[in-house]
Image (cartoon, rainbow, N blue to C red; front, side):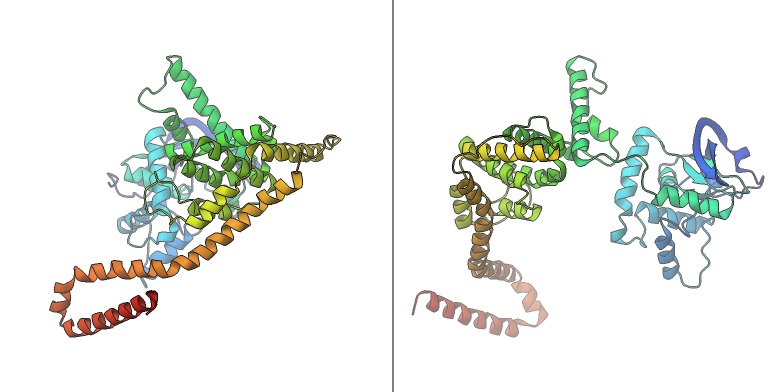
Length: 444
């Protein structure tokens, strides 16, 4: 989709006169002093992309390298459209690593649902200093206006740089949510929308609570919201297990471990593990997480060792039968592990809060059970590595079989290529190798 009108030179020399004043404002620092500048609805036909420097400078460099010796004027229709397509990720000049299409699609979806929420920053001549992708999306949607702050004509170049760099490179002044607080905030939103639906005050009857939360958080979808909820639910189970219900402050840097732990638990559940075995699995995971003895890589390996989640699409990991059986048999008694975890968590809580440590004896056989639980991970991963080496020849045989199946279906192509005799020699050689392997396996 194209905008209805091409770029027009600002003849009045005052972009404000051509724009509509809104009741919004945006604060910037000019000549060392904060100043609230009004936000205008600016006709898009008077704006042009300014990607010479800043966030998209590499796009202009790429455009120039593809058009050597050509003067690229962003105000001209051809280059205006080319730059727009680059920012949308639909241009032949776009490189995969730039991520433009994903970013543009998310922004487009958000603007379609909620309009343009964040004003851009525009120079007096119509050059967009901040908001170039917003401009591209609005053009693609066929919109006629761009919400932006128009800098005064006498704005010093250093102030333009400070404002643009501050908006695009600066760290937010507001402290970002911690991972745990993000999850809690999402769950709060889900609970609010569920309560509204139960009470007959549903704001969007055709949308799930997960969908409503996803729409409120830019760049998220329902799947991510459900994944977040699964993580916070597993954290709740962990905190209850260590007798610290609701103490999310004790999660800290352990939060990332729950991302992979959820996948392990879901895989086991969807495989049909019995309740007792599920309890032992979670108890072991909680102990590893509490002691900070397991990494995300370790958890991904455990997921593969037990065979992955049968409900997930795509190729499933090859189950390591010996390692899996050894792992399952070695899972500790959940009651004994819980006693150890409660004791450890009480000591950690006391250390964090500088209070007297609890006067409790270690649980019975504390050290033996604890060591066996911690060693189970290394034993399982080691066993899996051995099994992987043992499986390698079988994998190669399976690959050879699959490739020969492909060749069998391509015999006509081989005949037409004139390479029939060469193919026959290769197949005879393969047949001889197969006969030799068979004799060795049969001990002849």
